[in-house]
Length: 393
Image (cartoon, rainbow, N blue to C red; front, side, top):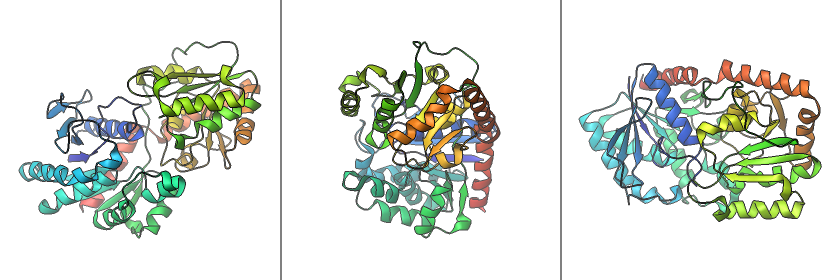
């Protein structure tokens, strides 16, 4: 099958950790790689945000990345990209008129807009993965939401017009139903994890004698890292490693990092919070293995790749019971889900893993088994092909 993926702001070649570089980049890169391994021809179309890369580049995993001219060749925050989607769509239309794909898979709502405009002329089927929904973002961020005002209306239009929708978790189904997306148009296919990179076997990063919990991800308020910092107050003898920071420059220059430092000082735990900044992807397995538990306490989470990476490394996960983490974390088996993720509740959920080495080992083994059974990228790719075939039919 010839597959065109559209990921307007999230290049699969981007360095992780930037303001708009996170789980979607990983998802697109790993899904494209798995589909390529299974014999499909994959081209990922992403907006050119730097002048240097060639128009077409081959990724290390064999798929093609096409840098599309749409707006200035520099980084533009994704919430300001909507005016450039018409130009993006026109270039997609020109490319597909010459070489039409069998299926178009759009990642994020603005990619869906551009893909539908471009695919209309050639009558190409479009499958949409939202990765995040405007209704959910607005509900949790309120006035702080910087999305274009038309986002919710346009997402609803995309759901009506596309041939199929891939939801990454069951929580998303109710949101899509409220958008009047027909249930028979939706397939629930989660994100995956690289089971050869994230493993329980291998070196662990060094640490001092005390316990360690780890939190990983972009430094943005919605990730709820302040909750995890405050939980340290009830976890004496435990340090927190925060793996995340700007793609370039020192972590001290990041506004959210400075805010989190103040939270740590006000809570009286600053001597137990380590913030080394962004840690390269290849070094993360060792960081996970160094931890007694991985903690994820976001306000909301469309899916959440960090819990899968931790589970694949055999580390228990304590997570807020939101979004995709309600699917990925098996409560009481591979970790703990915290319905009301207050600092006190998070600390209470973490404490058993610090006090009971056998529970920690048993939970870690269960996490690895669950990751292998349900979340390999090859299995995710096979399910995605089924969704493509249904949409194409």
